[in-house]
Length: 188
Image (cartoon, rainbow, N blue to C red; front, side, top):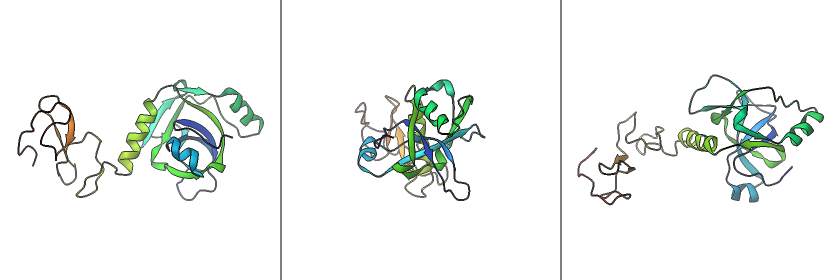
């Protein structure tokens, strides 16, 4: 096993023991921590993956087996060691609401990665939403990255430039993208 998995790689991991509704057992996990953390920390941040379930976007992200580049030699080793990696499953999900840190000792081996950054970007957006990284500064309700106002308390956080249509923080007097002056009083 590599002691330094990379962001975006998929590993077979042991998530036992678990409590309550946590994902448990041996399963694929998507590495979400950055490569600096992966190199120097004894833990990595992951999101578990499982067979298709009810999709609740952005919390659960579906994908197909065709979206992956699988490490066939490592999967063969897993099956020889009785880990029962099932390659026949065509549809799978990434369970972003189950994101957590685990010890690198729980990682058994790399089993693949996605063909494109599309899913890494979806996971990043989902985790930002789940952890309220882009949350309302007034009520902490989760907001989309490009959201202009909080759906719960209606506080305006961002504005859209009338000239270039880019979204930016409400505190700017000039658009940081095109330099046009912002119309005073908009959205306040």
